[in-house]
Amino acid sequence: MNKNLGSTSLRGKKRVVNPVQSYDTLPAPLRVWLSEVVLPWPPKSAKRIWVKTLSKGENAEGALMAL
Image 1: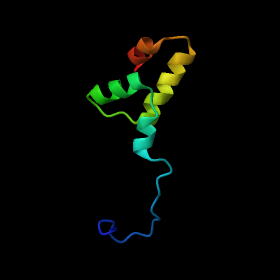
Image 2: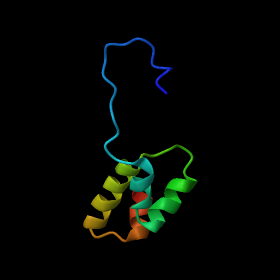
Image 3: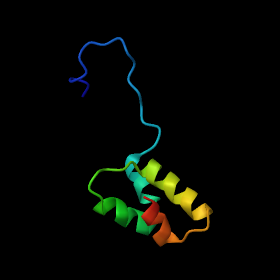
């Protein structure tokens, strides 16, 4: 399976988290927003902004506007 790596002395990195699982744990409004955006956003970055905005007292709609 590692046919396209070429010859390198660098070690390969293993993923710590499952990207699908991290997407599935996001709140429903945030998942809908991520599915409709033009440019791809990593779930981790979107969740960080979501949590930060909600902690400031904004509602879900305000958090989506911050994104």
